[in-house]
Image 1 (spheres, rainbow, N blue to C red):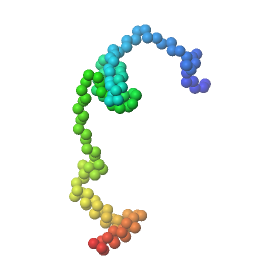
Image 2: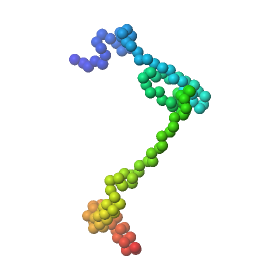
Image 3: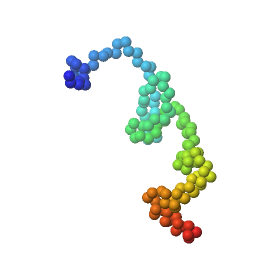
Image 4: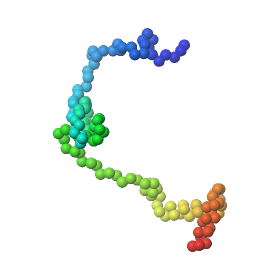
Length: 129
Protein backbone atom coordinates (compact mmCIF):
# COMPACT_ATOMS: atom_id res chain seq x y z
CA UNK A 1 0.00 0.00 0.00
CA UNK A 2 1.34 3.45 -0.84
CA UNK A 3 2.31 6.04 1.73
CA UNK A 4 -0.22 8.85 2.11
CA UNK A 5 0.57 12.25 3.57
CA UNK A 6 -3.08 13.35 3.88
CA UNK A 7 -6.04 11.85 5.62
CA UNK A 8 -8.19 9.55 3.56
CA UNK A 9 -11.22 11.36 2.19
CA UNK A 10 -9.72 14.83 2.41
CA UNK A 11 -7.70 16.88 0.01
CA UNK A 12 -4.85 19.33 0.32
CA UNK A 13 -6.23 22.77 1.14
CA UNK A 14 -9.54 21.44 2.44
CA UNK A 15 -11.30 23.39 5.15
CA UNK A 16 -10.81 22.28 8.71
CA UNK A 17 -13.69 20.57 10.51
CA UNK A 18 -12.52 21.85 13.88
CA UNK A 19 -14.37 24.69 15.52
CA UNK A 20 -13.78 26.90 18.53
CA UNK A 21 -16.59 25.50 20.66
CA UNK A 22 -15.36 24.46 24.07
CA UNK A 23 -11.96 26.14 23.63
CA UNK A 24 -10.86 28.62 26.28
CA UNK A 25 -8.38 31.13 24.95
CA UNK A 26 -5.69 32.49 27.24
CA UNK A 27 -6.25 35.99 28.55
CA UNK A 28 -4.33 38.51 26.51
CA UNK A 29 -2.96 42.00 26.92
CA UNK A 30 -1.85 44.52 24.34
CA UNK A 31 1.44 46.31 25.01
CA UNK A 32 2.54 49.44 23.15
CA UNK A 33 6.14 50.08 22.08
CA UNK A 34 7.81 53.05 20.39
CA UNK A 35 11.19 53.13 18.67
CA UNK A 36 13.76 55.90 18.33
CA UNK A 37 12.59 56.61 14.74
CA UNK A 38 9.12 57.50 16.07
CA UNK A 39 7.34 54.30 15.01
CA UNK A 40 4.68 53.14 17.42
CA UNK A 41 3.31 49.59 17.38
CA UNK A 42 1.49 47.15 19.63
CA UNK A 43 2.24 43.54 20.52
CA UNK A 44 -0.14 41.01 22.08
CA UNK A 45 1.05 38.91 25.02
CA UNK A 46 -0.54 36.51 27.44
CA UNK A 47 -1.41 38.09 30.78
CA UNK A 48 0.77 35.42 32.42
CA UNK A 49 3.81 36.22 30.23
CA UNK A 50 6.70 38.35 31.41
CA UNK A 51 6.52 41.34 29.04
CA UNK A 52 9.95 42.53 27.86
CA UNK A 53 10.82 46.21 28.17
CA UNK A 54 12.66 46.17 24.81
CA UNK A 55 11.46 44.83 21.45
CA UNK A 56 12.71 45.16 17.86
CA UNK A 57 10.67 47.54 15.70
CA UNK A 58 8.91 45.61 12.90
CA UNK A 59 9.35 48.57 10.50
CA UNK A 60 12.96 49.64 10.88
CA UNK A 61 14.46 46.95 13.15
CA UNK A 62 15.76 49.39 15.75
CA UNK A 63 15.36 48.79 19.45
CA UNK A 64 11.97 49.89 20.79
CA UNK A 65 11.08 50.73 24.37
CA UNK A 66 7.82 49.79 26.02
CA UNK A 67 5.60 52.85 26.42
CA UNK A 68 5.40 54.26 29.98
CA UNK A 69 8.45 52.34 31.23
CA UNK A 70 12.04 53.27 31.93
CA UNK A 71 14.95 51.79 30.05
CA UNK A 72 16.16 48.66 31.90
CA UNK A 73 19.63 48.65 33.40
CA UNK A 74 22.12 46.84 31.22
CA UNK A 75 23.87 43.93 32.86
CA UNK A 76 27.65 44.25 32.95
CA UNK A 77 29.14 42.47 29.97
CA UNK A 78 31.32 39.46 30.70
CA UNK A 79 34.80 39.67 29.26
CA UNK A 80 35.34 37.22 26.42
CA UNK A 81 37.09 34.01 27.45
CA UNK A 82 40.03 33.31 25.18
CA UNK A 83 41.64 29.94 24.49
CA UNK A 84 44.51 31.00 26.74
CA UNK A 85 42.11 31.70 29.63
CA UNK A 86 40.50 28.27 29.25
CA UNK A 87 43.91 26.61 29.07
CA UNK A 88 44.98 28.33 32.29
CA UNK A 89 41.86 26.97 33.99
CA UNK A 90 43.14 23.44 33.32
CA UNK A 91 46.91 23.83 33.65
CA UNK A 92 49.42 26.00 35.50
CA UNK A 93 52.24 27.90 33.79
CA UNK A 94 54.76 25.40 35.20
CA UNK A 95 52.81 22.46 33.71
CA UNK A 96 52.65 24.20 30.34
CA UNK A 97 56.39 24.90 30.34
CA UNK A 98 57.11 21.25 31.17
CA UNK A 99 54.83 20.07 28.33
CA UNK A 100 56.49 22.49 25.92
CA UNK A 101 59.95 21.22 26.87
CA UNK A 102 58.84 17.59 26.37
CA UNK A 103 57.36 18.31 22.94
CA UNK A 104 60.39 20.32 21.84
CA UNK A 105 62.67 17.46 22.88
CA UNK A 106 60.57 14.97 20.88
CA UNK A 107 60.61 17.33 17.93
CA UNK A 108 64.37 17.84 18.02
CA UNK A 109 65.05 14.12 18.37
CA UNK A 110 62.97 13.39 15.27
CA UNK A 111 60.40 11.21 17.08
CA UNK A 112 57.54 13.32 15.76
CA UNK A 113 56.99 12.23 12.13
CA UNK A 114 56.71 14.91 9.48
CA UNK A 115 58.29 17.63 11.60
CA UNK A 116 61.93 17.31 10.47
CA UNK A 117 61.90 20.79 8.94
CA UNK A 118 60.89 22.21 12.32
CA UNK A 119 63.65 20.30 14.10
CA UNK A 120 66.25 21.85 11.77
CA UNK A 121 64.89 25.33 12.46
CA UNK A 122 65.06 24.73 16.22
CA UNK A 123 68.66 23.53 15.97
CA UNK A 124 69.63 26.66 14.00
CA UNK A 125 68.02 28.89 16.63
CA UNK A 126 69.89 27.10 19.41
CA UNK A 127 73.24 27.68 17.65
CA UNK A 128 72.60 31.41 17.21
CA UNK A 129 71.45 31.89 20.81
